[in-house]
Length: 193
Image 1 (spheres, helix red, strand yellow):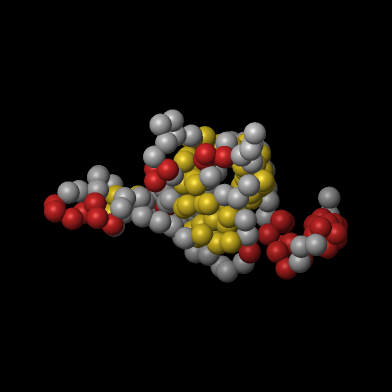
Image 2: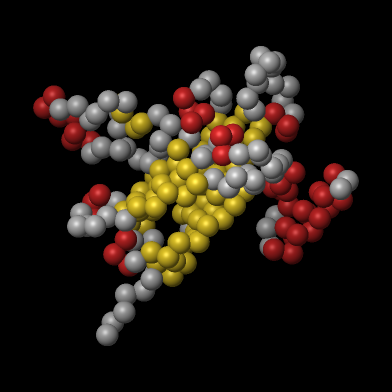
């Protein structure tokens, strides 16, 4: 298919869905990949927040799609699990490649949080190996407070392409890779009978 036709289709589909076409260039870089070993985010872990102190915490691993760089998943969640931690595994964080990760919960950008409470380093106790200032490299933690009904979590990463030949980036749009996972969490409503 001609690149120009693909761009026109993408732009018209975005216009019909109510999304601005300013991000339509991004859709042109959505390529297929040979497998999970090349995924920028090979796994996203969702688990109940430890502050809920539940007897049976809930956790689910969402693997990357084997063929596509953009995919979505739908999960039903019990009402007692309304406060979650989102932990994307980002193996390129352990390399020298530049990257930026974005996590949106119901359209609101969330920031990375500390893995351990602030008081964990007081009185000489250590937070654990590989955790500097409460953050573990390659496994950032984000928090989400869910509302009753359907919640949307977007995890997106933008990274520079891996240059195995050592060439320098030239500033074109082809120098980046984009990967996105959209998770729809249906938080069941508490029955009042």
